[in-house]
Image: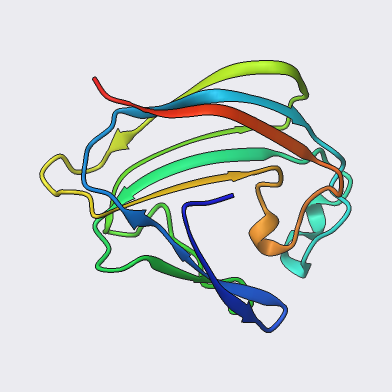
Length: 153
């Protein structure tokens, strides 16, 4: 699940616009989740070393000043470079491979890289398989989420 828009199929993957218009400065994201990971049993060539390991879920949030939503192309390997994209103003994430049988609260703090630039887009992604973009994960991994909200201090 992500904020943005599915554009079309592209080869064996998809073209996806990441981000929706947004211009405020939350301090984080809060909500509840349950997770049941499976063993990773599907992968692309680059991630074969993960076969047999426990899957990992991921919730991430980023604020950017891109001029348009970022076009992900899973077939061509075009993804956001979270470490080096100069347009990322703030970023935060939660990852776990732990089984969480009852809803547990999560709170993800946004780490601001720049306090002077104004956000133009927000991206929130929620996935049961952290490497799903790379066609890698455990069939049957299940992530349930509820009551997500942006936090402002």
